[in-house]
Image (tube, rainbow, N blue to C red; front, side):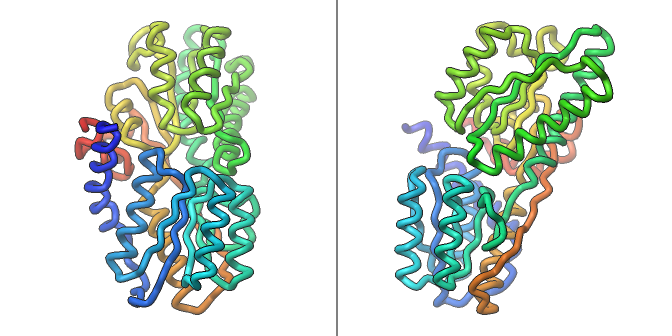
Length: 345
């Protein structure tokens, strides 16, 4: 518990710099009240995003009402209803999943309260301000980098590559986009270079490390020739390591037995593992940009008296790779934390 507390504390210190990078946009009035509902802050991305939003608003004199639903979508709905009853000026949510987000957005707009959804989009994006990473594009960029390496291996050995994907919870739009991006690359290479990839192995994680561990253990035991892995979230890299390392499969690039590894999110662990050569690439959700889009969207709606705004604001994302980390590391929020010593706590 102490180690977790120190890590979270380090994030809170580092995030002051993150908040300072966000454009302030419309100046808020002291009387503005915004309800911020979120799920349990289990990963670095959610902690950093949460703090960037709350610090920026409070620094502008906005009253922020925070509600943690602890991964319970029904509880989050009740919390949002409480915010509506209090007559807040606007709502920002990080929903549990795309289905529950639709219900919450509809309730807010029925009450004429503008609402913005941060990063985890509703399955129906026709209402509300929706800030979302282009999960398909970011995934394709990250997987493309290791696919190019796999192609060189295939051309030398003539042996097909065995890919594996750790799939997120498929009721979540983010997880669906990441799976689609992965298969887009695999299918494209198989069309161009027939026989390059074996049929991908899909490992369900439900965004849960324990579930991922059990299912990945079973998959690698049944398929020890896996040599190409994409995880739909960087937070599972320690889980992947715990499965590969005892089998001699956790090797840095350039070493016999190196498994090509890519992920998505852009956290501090991914940054450190790219530095060390164990991970080849990760698709980055630009947290700084997404927080800016969310805040500007909700503040502008409030200032304009627009109670039912509808915008889809896209973060195109990018890939941080072993090839570009030297000059692009400061663009990745996880590298900012890593370079400030976050993982040393």
